[in-house]
Structure formats: structure tokens, C-alpha cells
Length: 250
Image 1 (cartoon, rainbow, N blue to C red):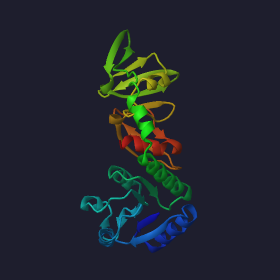
Image 2 (image 1 turned 90 degrees about the horizontal axis):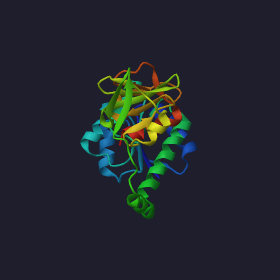
Image 3 (image 1 turned 90 degrees about the vertical axis):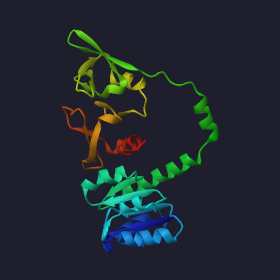
Image 4 (image 1 turned 60 degrees about the horizontal axis):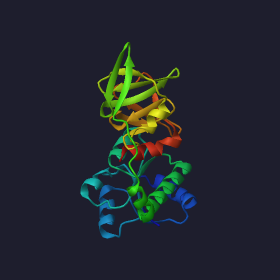
């Protein structure tokens, strides 16, 4: 497995290479750079690597520029010491990101994710055909909620998120309408399209359109800001964080 690394800090680059030797002994560093210019030159002159680990902030600019140049044709993992760059890495459709100093457990997760994706795209044609031939699951088109003495039918397309509070379930629409729903979140989730809705935690089931932004919250967790704004601080656990990023990038 061939890797390409870009980092303008030699000590950080050396630490990453040492960590790679322990976490992914099957991989070798085929090229390295400390600037956007050096990275561009190497990528234009060599075969695409299997995986690239790029520090976002290099000596002469942001490695995100390489996306605009069209020289990136391999999966990219961004590394950064600054939380504010996490959303930019995600918006660039990176495979993943690593906060410095790089944690070896997180690094191992990145390689496991890369292996899963390679296996996925290699494909099992028989399984794919079986999926395509399966009848589509019944999906909810509307959510009926109660607001006072009135019942309100909210089209699923207008739902922002569902929240469980004090053993009660509520639906919140994009316009801020909040209604009581009779079903628990697990039952509601079963009738929704998993490409559109994601279970953040035991309390929140959200639609993609309700996610305004997210960022690192410590210990591998992600904090999520919803629209309309939620009453609680909403977070995704470390175990669910990778699946959440994958879902939102669909």
C-alpha cells in the first residue's frame, strides 16, 4: 500500500511515519511534501498513491487547493491541529480527518475504514443484484403529531428532527413547529429513509437538512448544531462519529 504525506512540520511528519509503521506495517511512504507546490509537483509526476495524509495548513497555503487543481485522485485523510478546519476537510469530501497530535487508535480506524471502502467498491455483484431486486421498504410520507388539542400532519420532507424527552417523542419541523408524536424513536426510525435520517444518540433522530454544522467535542465525540436550534447540547459518540460523517457526505 503506497502512501503520500504532506506536512510542513518535520517533527510532526516523523511522528506520523513512526505511528504508521506500528499501525499499518503493510504500508510504505512513497512520497512526502512540506508545501502545496511540492505536493502538486509530486502528484503530477507519479502514479496516484493508495491513500494520502495531508496536513491542511502547509507552508505556502492550504492543501485544500489541490482539490481545486484536480490533482487529487486518491482517498484523502486530512490532518490538522485546529478544530476550525474540520468542517473544511469534511466539505472537501475527505475519507476522514485526524486531529493532531495523531492518536494511533484513530489512525487505525482510518485504515480500517479505507479497507472497508475498498472491499465495498470491489463489490459483491450477487448481493448487489439481490438488493436491487428486493421490494422497496414502506416509508412514511407524513408524520402526524399533536399540538394541544389539534393534530398536525407534517410531510417527511419538512421534518428537521425527532427528539425524545422525559419518555415522550416530539417532531420538530424546519419551520420550528414542534408536536408530540405517539411512537418511540425506534419505531419512527424504522419507517424513515436511512439516507435522509440518522440516529445521533438515544435522544435525537435528525434529517440531513437540519445539520447546520458540527465539530470536534473531545474524546472523539462530535458536537452538532441543529436548525431549528435544539434545547439541548447535541453530540455524537466516538463510536458513531465516523458513520455520521459518512451518512452526511452521501
